[in-house]
Image (cartoon, rainbow, N blue to C red; front, top):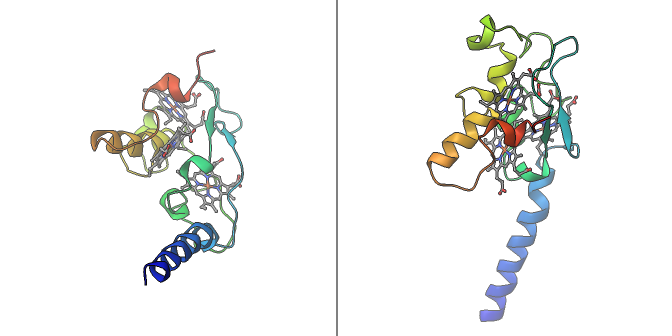
Length: 133
Ligand code: HEC
Ligand code: HEC
Ligand code: HEC
């Protein structure tokens, strides 16, 4: 009886470990370096991003316009987060807000909200994401 229960639990754990990452047919790329759109004068160092470090999240949390099947677009695709102007910081198309806005799917928005809830999360300090030159 005890043994059957153990086998059930091990099987369930294995199913979770291997079935979840293949929820979608698209694979997440390895570690990325995110840079501002071509032509933008960057004031900060580019940011390292690891999909592995965020594997517990659903892809659609961040890739919020993705249909779950087709190609995944970059954040600064046409019609998306392309406004790099200072004035455009509060616009939905703002490039800056996509990564620092209050929404819980922006890098800083999510990390700050989780930090407030005392959960294990990523950095919230500028220099932890943008290494000093
Ligand atoms: C925590 C947020 C987050 C999660 C969760 C996430 N990604 Fe990403 N992903 C990103 C960011 C940021 C980029 C870089 C986008 C850019 O360069 O504009 C990216 C880029 C990609 C790219 C490359 C797009 C391109 O054309 O350069 C693919 C493919 C991708 N992700 C697939 C996935 C898949 C599949 C999952 C789920 C298993 C996933 N991502 C989960 C944030 C995330
Ligand atoms: C919806 C929530 C969420 C979003 C959005 C998110 N993160 Fe995170 N991030 C986390 C959590 C949770 C962890 C801690 C994971 C762990 O160590 O268990 C983390 C960890 C990190 C870490 C430290 C560990 C590692 O993977 O190197 C970095 C750096 C990081 N995030 C950068 C980013 C960047 C850059 C973005 C935006 C492109 C981003 N995160 C978006 C939740 C999020
Ligand atoms: C959780 C990670 C994270 C934190 C913390 C963070 N940023 Fe960013 N930031 C990003 C990402 C990702 C981008 C988009 C990639 C890029 O352009 O470097 C970005 C882009 C930028 C840009 C536009 C590109 C450029 O170089 O001019 C500025 C400005 C910026 N961040 C300033 C800040 C400042 C100031 C802080 C602290 C108040 C901060 N960031 C905190 C992740 C972060």
